[in-house]
Length: 99
Image (cartoon, rainbow, N blue to C red; front, side, top):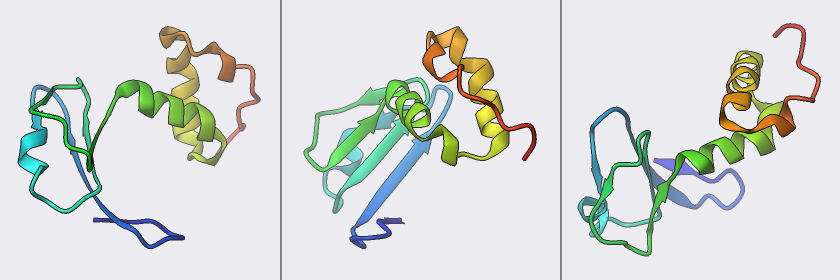
């Protein structure tokens, strides 16, 4: 269960990796909002208004926009990974020496 720090709105999240698929239909009868993330974007089922399937592009975009608030180890890893994904715009920012 996730709780928004300002509005106190509650949401659910489900995260899976590898070949495990997420079926949107499994969450259709649950109260929302619900956020699903599957690292290989293996989503099945019909769309539901209260279920959001998060893509890898959503995650990398979030990291780009909020990189300075991430832990130093994640900033360094992302700056190494970003050029491989064509996300070179963030590389020019100064990396912290240590954290």
